[in-house]
Length: 258
Image 1 (tube, rainbow, N blue to C red):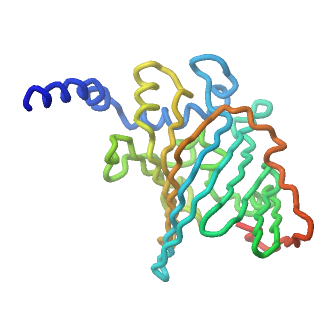
Image 2 (cartoon, rainbow, N blue to C red):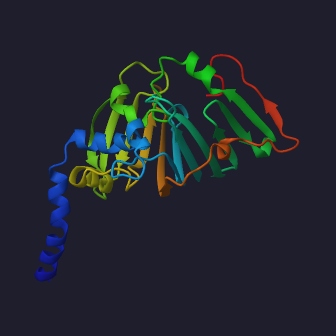
Image 3 (cartoon, rainbow, N blue to C red):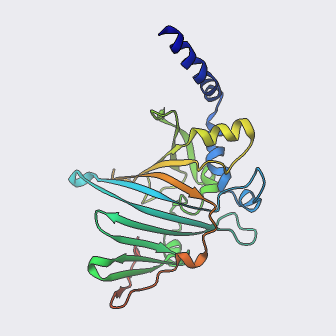
């Protein structure tokens, strides 16, 4: 029995030793670098980043005021479109909820559609107008993954590892936000070790889970699984085609659908 225990320990030692030398900056860089504009543009090299991804997601939201928990799951797709010299990409996304009810949230980076099949309605918002009205909002998790350290202060979460040895970071907005008090991100240890030991990014999707807590103590956790990336998703995939007979609703005012 002791022999097998020693063998198992020897097999684990390389990973344990590597993790022990990994700093907070290493984890933050391994998280951000695959999404930086210059890295994403260096396709086909060991610096090649992540320009799109698809995968399953599980979402759990807790509403503090009424102590209520809501759960959902479905399929998510993202595309980051870097144009010109801008370091901030156009973020296109499609969240397809299968549970608890069917709905779709789609954006081509300019317009956002929230499709509610049961209500036969689609809510259409102009994302550019939302951004202008919420200029103090550092909600750059969607569009600024390559610049998280610029918009958030980054530190270790407590605890700083999950049960599988992945790293956990806690991010605080550098400016007051009405939407985010803190953001917690679970970073895949394989992506971090690949970055530290091999100076490579883009071999592993670095984000395993995120938790956003707002100023009212409401929280939303999203866990990603079965993620595939750099599939060459087209911009047309992120256009919503309105089914016949579906009513269009256009919100007005400061919230604009968010």
